[in-house]
Length: 212
Ligand code: BEZ
Image 1: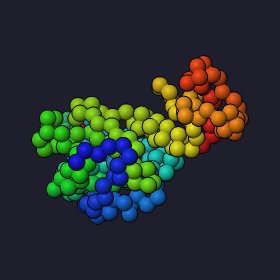
Image 2: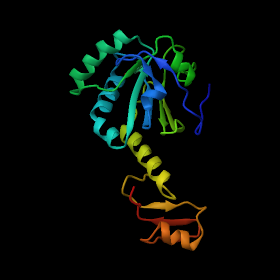
Image 3: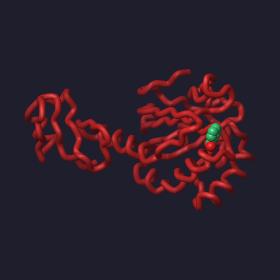
């Protein structure tokens, strides 16, 4: 099934390193990040899961629960976690879903047959507290993901949910934002942006980042 922005993230129950994971119930009212990797005991994946463990405080600060997934069985995941902890100097505390029957990979279209008939590609699903898919990223097995970019996307989603702004090219948390083109009413603009804004063109209005 091809999942698109705005779709409800499919629910599932699947085995994980922390026991059976009932996805929607586990997410509760938090944001979620569900990401797949091709296989256990592979070098790029080891660095990615190490980085995810290292960034645990950053995900927690943003109210985001993280779950990884590959199509390996749970005993393999558990053995591999020991290696990740040793080689990356971390403690993996988040669940790694053991999708040996490919139930979740199929639901989320994480196996791309032109890349590999049997392994999941590097998919990322950003899921909001209403269980809506808000963004997706897909990389091939050979390209490790940039987790600073993943945090940046979460920051942008959470900011733009709260304020009538969008985040421009290469934006990082704290940088100037642009005002959404649909907001034109002068009183509403004054209320939303008491610090004012610069109008470079009627459609290009730059403002300091509002406080989240
Ligand atoms: C890796 O995670 O290192 C990897 C996995 C599959 C193919 C190539 C690299």
